[in-house]
View 1 (cartoon, rainbow, N blue to C red):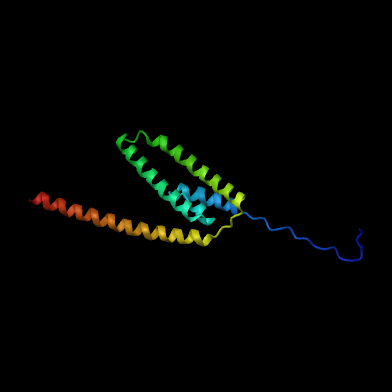
View 2: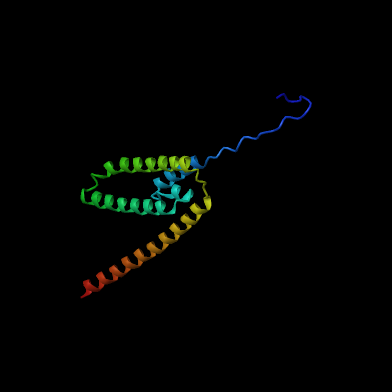
Length: 145
């Protein structure tokens, strides 16, 4: 089968390179460093795993905080490398998940999650400020009694 040199060659475009796996890994690692581990999984649409990782990481950070407080800060130097390893491993896992399943990412999920996290932070911060103010008022009442 020969082709006629006078006819234009048929163009076969290369599929665009999909960088979803890299973007998911970067989102997971960068936001994980700021305490929002799981956003890379949210980016690729794995909502249940994303929420489980986020809540599990927050519980781990709370437990670490208690241990650090009771040890006088001595255990703090042990938890930082552990947390960095967890964040990097989660980033690698989300990258491998995208490569294995062909999942596509949506930055809209991440934006909505960040907006909800900011709203939650404001609500929790308001509750904490209200509670501390109430405790201060109660302490003043007890001191005057």
